[in-house]
Length: 520
Image (cartoon, rainbow, N blue to C red; front, top):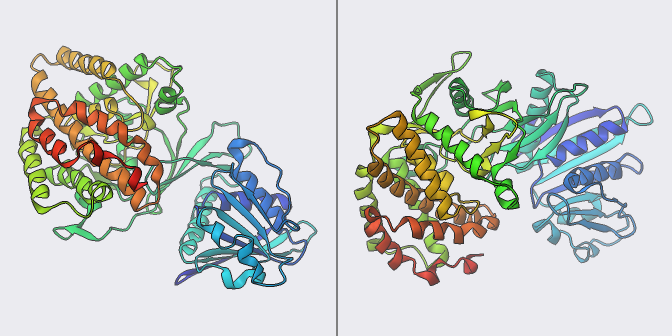
């Protein structure tokens, strides 16, 4: 049960395997900075829990030795998904010894497991997960009381919701493993149904996100930019894509209100991994990805999608308000990180005046479903399939009605991997050839102009987003992509239609002001 900022739950764990399984479940929800306390008498399973937790966090790197820190008092693990520090305060005689062991300091950069937390009670943070183990009614059974404080109250409650969803869907006892997601708040797991020979499936955990503060005309950023706030959008767009023969995941179970889906694991290789390995010939994968965009451009898709049960989703229009608030991220986040303070008023005014002169040049009569994040992390190459089925598509919940050039620019000016100019040129030509083959009136020059405008818009937005991820969300890793974004932007700004924008960038962000090392 949840009361205020505290959540309490009691479980009966019938065996040591059940204790280990629950430890693995907790590991799926942790974040850097978490403190998990393990209380209970000697022999009640605290170290069993800790070992299972650490091994689950190490799944990608094999199973490490996990010695009890009874004598060393602290054991750290750097090769886990997130760094882990395992403390055992049993032998601490004086609370003044606790900081000497690195607590709570290590909690700033690691996940902390703390056995015998009462010996370090004065140093425990307000936000924490308390786990107390006790003997059960048999040698292996245990009672477990879980109390989540602060942010952990929400996560612990979410754990129970997800467990009930899995049980109700026939997935009780399934094996669950962490699956790396994207930059959003969505969380993913790969699950293997117990006792079945079926392929693994994906659990998508996307609780409804509360609107942020109003930023313009009384509306929050998410509404102005038309970002999905629940899984209904994903389910609806998925239905539409599958309906025209594209490879989007099958949905096996859903609870739209709770924000939970169990979807198909499309298998194959992620485009991003293929490009980064430098071993794969990407000609066929990129051409097939372009074929998908041609299919989208030629397929009339509904503005309103009705899901089973009658739930409706309206695909929003990628209007000027959305386009503009996205480019504003550059001024709100990137500018202050590399300059001192906010941009001067005249700089902002000129910036918006240029963009407002560009929006009318977009052909709004050519709107299609614009998936919006159509790039290498969200595309899966399924070489064993044929035709359009070779390209698996994920992460499309923010789909809007927009210009077809947007997704092509997203693919060929990929923020996460290098796409050379020759590949961009060839794939652009291939796209135009396919469109003209189906429509002799296809206007290549008008499309090229829209491509340049939307490419510049997207790159400008992402510069701001990646800096926001660093400054607001504590994710500096995205800054590694900044030089690539500037290279793409420089080549895009050579388009004649972007002359004024190019001059603005040259004045506002000369080479020295593009550096991000001072922001790291």
